[in-house]
Every structure is written in C-alpha cells, then in structure tokens.
Amino acid sequence: MGIFVQTLGFGIAAGAVISLGAVGFTVQFGISNVLNITYGAFMTLAAFLGYVLLNRGLDVWVVLVAVGVVIAIASAVFNRVFLSPLRGRGAGFVNLIIGTVAAAIILQGVIVIAAGPSAVTYGQQYGKTVSGAGLVFSLAQLIIISITVALMFGLHLLLTRTKVGRAMRATSTNRTVARACGIRTERIIDLTWLLTGFLCGAAGVALAVTTVTFDFSIGSTFLIYMIAASVLGGIGQPYGAMIGGLVVGITSQLGAAYWSPAYQDVVAFCILIAMLLIRPRGLFVAAGVNRRNLSAT
Amino acid sequence: MADASESGGKTALEVEGLTAGYGDIEIVHGIDLSVSEGSLVSVVGPNGAGKSTLLKAILGLVKVFDGSIRLDGHDVTRFPLEQLVRRGIGYVPQVDDVFETLRVHENLEMGGYLLDKPTRARRIEEVLEFFPVLAEHMRRYVGTMSGGERKMVAVGRALMTSPRVVIFDEPTAGLAPTLVQSVLEDQARALADRGKAVLLVEQRAHAALQLSDWAYVLVQGRVARSARAADVLSDPEMGEVFLGGAVKS
Image (cartoon, rainbow over all chains, first blue to last red; front, side, top):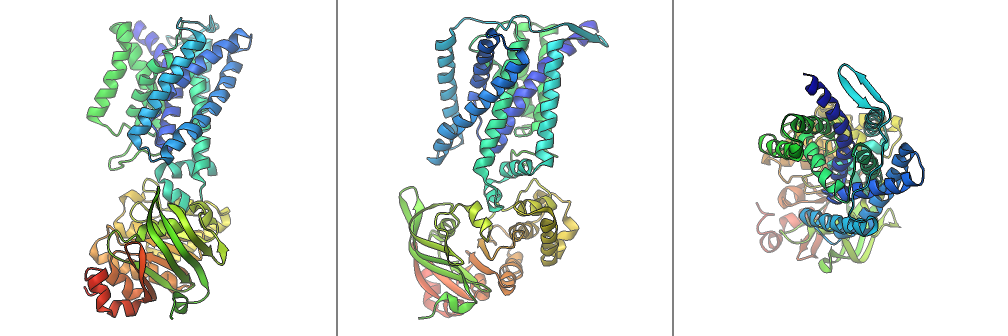
C-alpha cells in the first residue's frame, strides 16, 4: 500500500507535466487540424533554452514563463512561415504530418549541433519535501501541479467565458461556418499557436525540472505520452487531455514501480493501442460525434 | 434586353465579367450576374457547370482571375468571406452548414458574433419569429437534429447579422425529397419576400425555378441564358440541352 500511495504521488506529478503538454498539443490539433509532431522538438528546445537561462542565474519559474513566451512566438512563426504556406499549396492532412516530422528532425538536429549530444541537468530544483496522506511531493512538483491547474483553469475560462474562446471553439468545429459568422479565423489560429506554444514551452521546462538529466531526445520521447493522453481523452478535447495526462502519468509510474522502470514507455503505448481498439473517439467524446473539435462542455 | 434588376428593387449584388477557378485553372468565365432586393435569383445548370465555383468566387473562397463583384455599389472583389459578412452578406453553405457539436442557441449566438449582447438577443428573437419551431429546441445539440431542422439553424445563424444579401449553396442537398419544397419556399422565397436579395445555387432546377424571379443557366462555366425563371422553365430547349430534362421533370 505504501509503495502504491507513493507511486500515486509520482504519477500525479508526472501527469501534471503530461497534461500541460497534452492540452497544448490537443488544442493545437483541434483548432488548426495539424497533428504537429514538431511539438516534441519544441519542448526539447524549451528545455535547452531553460538550461541556458538558468545558467545565467535566473530563477527557474521566471525561466518557465520566459521560455513559454519564446516558444509561443516560435510556434506561431512556425505555423505562419511553414504550415500555412503548405496548406495554401493544397497539402493534405498526411502531407502536413510528414512536414512536421521533417521539421522535428531538423530542429532536433539543430539542437544537437548547438548544445551537443550529451545529457545536461537543471541541477537540484526540487526544493523541500512536502508530505501528507502518504503522498510525498517536492516543492517543485507542487509548484508544477499548481501551475498546470492554474493554466488549465485559465484555459477553461478563456474557452467558455470570452468572445475569443467562443471563436476558437467555432473555428475548431467548422472553419467555413466560423468565417461566415464574421470570425477572422486566421487570427484565431495565430492566437491558438501562441497559446499552445506557451503551454509547450512551459511543459518543456517543467519536464526538465522534474527530470534528473535530459538530452536532445527528451521531447520526442515525451511526445508519445502526450499523444497517448490526447487519444485517451479524445483528440481535440482539452479537458480529456487533462484527465488523460493524469491517467497516463499515474499508470506509467505504477508500471515502473510494480513492473520495471524500463517498461514505463510500454505502458503509455499499451494505453494508446488499447484506447484505439476499444474506444477510438476517446473517453470524453460522446457517441455520434465524429469530428475533433474544441468542446467546452 | 431584360435583365435581373427587373425582378426586384435596388441592385444589391452585381457581378461583372467574373473569371475564377482553382490554382491556375479557370472554371467560370466572364460571368455577369445581378441580384436585387426582394428578389430570388437562381443559378442552375448541369453538374460541373461551375455553379458552386461561381458562388465561392463571390464569397472570396476561390481565386478570382478577372472581373468585379459589387455589393451595394461598393467593390468587394477578392474580399475574404469574413469581411463580406461584415458588409452585409449572409452565407448558408451546402451540407456542412452548422456547428454540429454546439447547441442551437450557441449556433445562433455564434452567428451574432459581431454583435453586442442586446442586439444579439434581439436578433435571436427575430430568428425565432421566422423559425418558431426552433424555440422548442434551443438547448438541443444541432448534431442530433434532422436535416430540415439543421437547415433552419443554418439559415437562422446566417440571418443573425441581418444581411441584405443571402447566398444559399444547394440548400436541398442531402435533404429528404419531402423537405425540398419547404426549404426553398419557406426559406429562400420567404426571405426574398421580406426584402432580402437572395442568390440561390441549386441542383434541383425545376423546384428552384418555380419559386425564382430570375435565373441564370450556367453551362461549362459560362452563362448560357439569363432570363425570367418562368421563361427558362417553359423553354424546352433549356430542359433538353442544358439540364438533362431537369426543367421538365
């Protein structure tokens, strides 16, 4: 029981980071209809940018916000400069995925050239330990969980209470009809890439904080967890991705504790395959709804 | 020579010499067309004639190579759809015409995205006056509604901005045959009777022409005939040659 509760704590902490990344990933897909594999490489970039800023003496939480902003801008530029022109030339869904795979490999290569192939570390950023009800968290983990909860709540308010949030949901559901309502969908998509880019950058730094060491492959490895969380929650569903992230985080930690740490990734893959076989639309998409859209209900 | 402006009031939408298509390929060539307030103008023709491309060119959804589009006398050629909506065009797309995962009231609210809250509430009341049946379904998800009900939501959504020009792209596509007449009569014709300039692209030529004031027959991307709808309907040559007998049916 002791191991289970302790592992649950690790799982919640890991799940918070996965949720943070997965929500950005799934919202990006839901609105712009691009399965952006480069997302993982942007997380790697965020982790390394964070490493550079930390070495300049900045506080890790200031770094998280600053890197989030940089990756937000980089993501929006990436969409405008690379993906939008591809779409304009008639690239289909699969072509766009292949384009993002290619871009991810290039970006990862650039990171290796700039930072080298060796693993690096943020050092001890954990802070003091906090425990309760058998769960043990480091202060850093609690801050990351709090940041995730705050960002998710902010996203919820944005989607449900603001005009721009409603426009995002409309654009996600039917872009032509959204335009026929007078919504400037290109601006909404730009805003989406900024917002999800921020989540990606913040998740990259959060991941590096909770990882002992990391190298150029951190983002691409983590991408599978985020995809599993997104599929579990129903692709395009931010609330589904939040819950999916927690489920993937907890089960993969339980797999590591009770089976072997080497099988952590296997658990994530098993969840992904099981969901695709049993309930491909995800846990949080109602039957009969056959499209991915940004639901806020 | 008669023209479409005879069929109604002031000209609201005017297309002159429009050539448009996809990529480098021209689909419609040198189209002249006009729609006046209070009139229903149909564009009919065989499959592949370029009807939808013409409509998409007017709406800024495909490339315009040449020609001009004027809305209330102002040049709006190559304006994107969202800007045209802001200037008084309402658009009801063919089949994928609603936010199907949103509720009816949310669809109408999205239609009034550009409006302030009090105006939006007032317009919803107006839409419900036009489609009283929707009042009972405001909390329903549109994805669970029948084709006819969905079409009411789609048209209601387009009416939220109180457009002067309403453009329908094959509103009867995918609908049960029993609903065809009611959609054309209770929606397209009724809006024209309320003073809107209505442009209708329709595959069911006979049904559309029966209710229209003016018709443009499109063949291979060109206007083969522009005449009173009743004249097109009674012209055996139109039915045989251009519409594969559709007019007579």
